[in-house]
Length: 150
Image 1 (cartoon, rainbow, N blue to C red):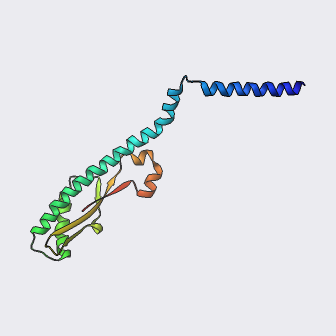
Image 2: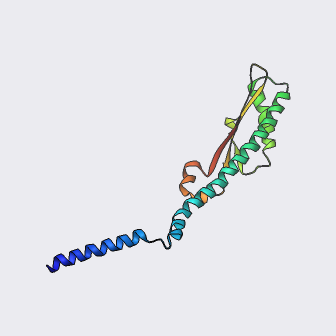
Image 3: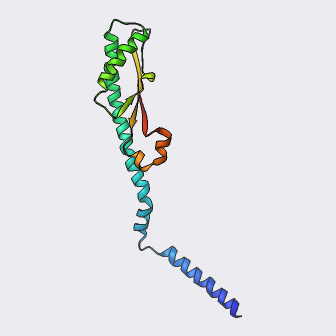
């Protein structure tokens, strides 16, 4: 009988303890905040890099538009010549942004059938926050975000 009573008593104590944990409300805000904080910090700091990439994309678009106009004003008509003129203008326009790397092999200027110069370019934006807080991120993307414009 003593063993049965002991096991029954232990079961009742576990049940009471479980109910107390389930019904307890003191300190839950702090606990929930502590559990949610790392995710919130990661999203906020990731937003810094995404904002930076979006800003660079807008600046790249402006620089690419100016380079396309420079290529269109030139007397050249072949894609290779237009790319040479446009790439020179694009490099000059992007000198104000030292933290980006122009992908020259993915920059093209093409004269279409309507005699309009169509330009495409990509740059790599160096991340500020992601390489600090997300170490595996740098191994896959080399701490840079690709950004393109058309």
